[in-house]
Image 1: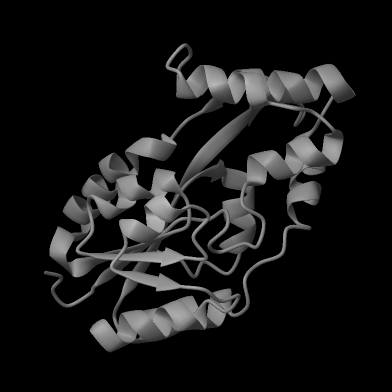
Image 2 (image 1 turned 60 degrees about the vertical axis):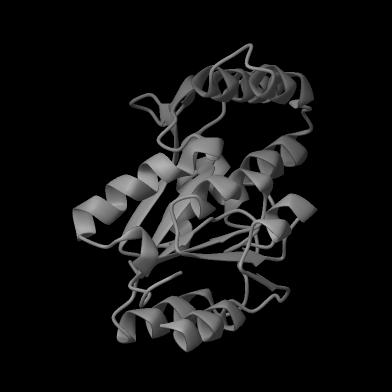
Length: 218
């Protein structure tokens, strides 16, 4: 049973944003299909870092030189959920910390956190050279199906227990968040498995609906 909530772990893609994947958004914008790479990772034939490398290489093969600024500009068109900043600020006023834990692209997380509303941000980093040109490599700070590892470290650093933590996710990968959380919220769930693993299911485009639930429990 959950205790008083002091920490909320947020998935990013599909939770804080309307689009379900920042990676897929770039794939769609430039017209590439990463299904072979995805299947190879899901089947365990490549590591997650290799998955990232292969996806980035798809971009470079399609468009040639590709810069951080170009990717960031594309990501800036992804629509946020309503009331992201006010909702997170409301949690902060109630003494509750918010942390992004996402397998998405860190540059989108930077956009969402431009006002420094989140206490910590964990997302996956694409590498670029000194001129800002993307190279086919990245740093997988968050393995999508092992978010519990990151969350455990956050909890230890903040002195907050599993029982005092809530996670908000929308995909089966976020079940890994739920494993390390006393309160589990599926927000606009994409598959039945995440709904079944949740304590609460919320369907809305307004992040305040999640915060209201959390404050009612806190």
